Amino acid sequence: MPSDTSAALQALIRQVETLTTTVTDQQKRMDGLHGHNARLLDQIKDTRRDTGVVNTALRQNSKGIDASADSMPPGVYLTREEARDPRKYAEAKTQAKTEGVPLLVLRDDDKPSDLDTSKQAIPIQSKIVTFDDDHEWVRWLRADQNTGSGLISRRLQAERDGYQIKTFTTLDDLPDHARTKFELMEGAANANEA
Image 1 (cartoon, rainbow, N blue to C red):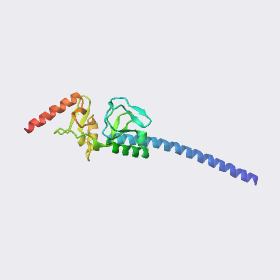
Image 2 (image 1 turned 45 degrees about the horizontal axis):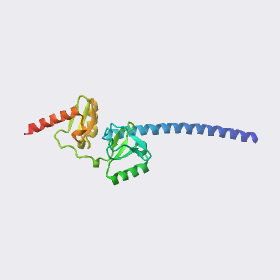
Image 3 (image 1 turned 45 degrees about the vertical axis):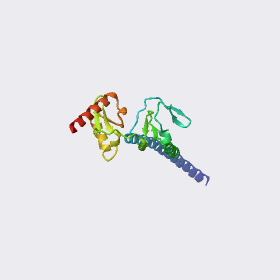
Image 4 (image 1 turned 135 degrees about the vertical axis):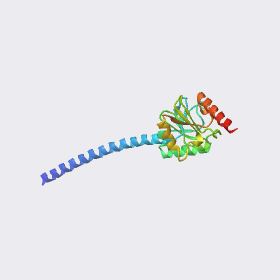
């Protein structure tokens, strides 16, 4: 009997080792899948967000992300990792609502992405909704037009044409050369109406 028991134990040990190896391999694949999905989710969210570029350095403190009052627009800031934590996100959202400021998630390259568009400035009223900046290869789109069913098709068309879409709310959002082009186009559109 002892040999039958030993053989059974040896077989059981081999099965446990095989099972352990299988579970370890599956865990590695799941970890890789989780990382891959997180990257894809970030890419999808980046394409949906109207990103504001802040050219100043950010510093991190114990409450998350903070910057000097002169360098950052008012808002509640979270890193992407913090935004994935439902508890931290809910707290930040409540804080932003209480303070009446937007909730911003910092991208990996430290550029905030505005998640709360309800508190944004009112877009400039103009006849020009979109125009191309051939100098920087940017297709500028008025922020209030960056919604709706045509959003994805506009972005895809811009990419096919070799442009990156950026939005503007006021003329201050445009670089000088793009502002000049916008003003000329707006002047021409108004002259045609008169």
